Image (cartoon, rainbow, N blue to C red; front, side):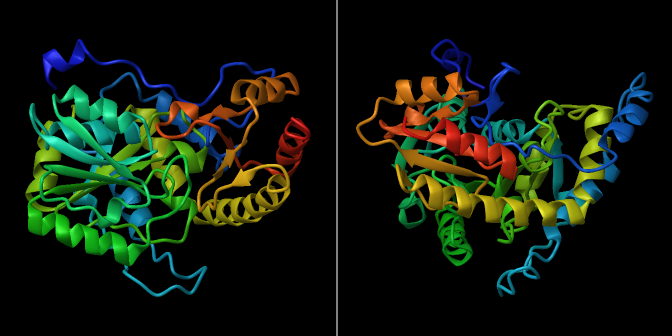
Length: 351
């Protein structure tokens, strides 16, 4: 990290609220959790009087199997079968730490990184903290961009806040061009497990960042990981903080990733409810197509602050998406359970 850059950095706004009196649609986390999580956490907490095993073998084996799982069965979609070795997994305290670690080992002062816009605001911040410069490209044009002038290129799939997944063949073609150019490709797959699209993990020259926050509804646990191969994996492994996961986070994360039935149920519910919300909300808003557990809405000539405040007065928190560059009349809403989604629709009626 560049000390000079730190003095110029600022914090990035995010969704989520600590107000328990409202239903939170501003953060894109699963409202449900796998069975047995509490018991796993309590058992692991009893072992927290000792340092964690810094090898995290059980967590890495669970993560490798989770990412490698054949994801074509639900859709019948042919494509690339991801294979990930436990040795390729770098445990981190959440997906954001995986991103920071990736930028730390690939960027320095004066470098540049290609980033999608609008997208997750932490990319710009983390790149700038290394003393490097983010270079923005429209999120739907990033896979056609020329990576040659840049040390790093970033892709978010599905993209936050717009929601579309990157076509796997196009993403791999872009990864090929990045390798030819000597550009490291960092792919943020924080929401990919809500889809049946295979991960790009295991491709040379690519760092994948994964989060367990969203699918498993445990943002406070702070568990995630990076995946890379070859010398890039070695750099991440050396730079990783020692004891990068707490004992409870590692145990809970491994437990969650092994619950295939929970993931399947969540995907089915999110897909069905997302379509129902899209159809209902399209009567009053422009709704972006989405493969993610959220929808981006253009509120048109309405005042965004007034829409957000009216929804809150009706018991629902939604995300003011004007904090994302290029969005000036937008809000983002999560996809939750049917009864909760009904409350969202009532809160946004006639705003």
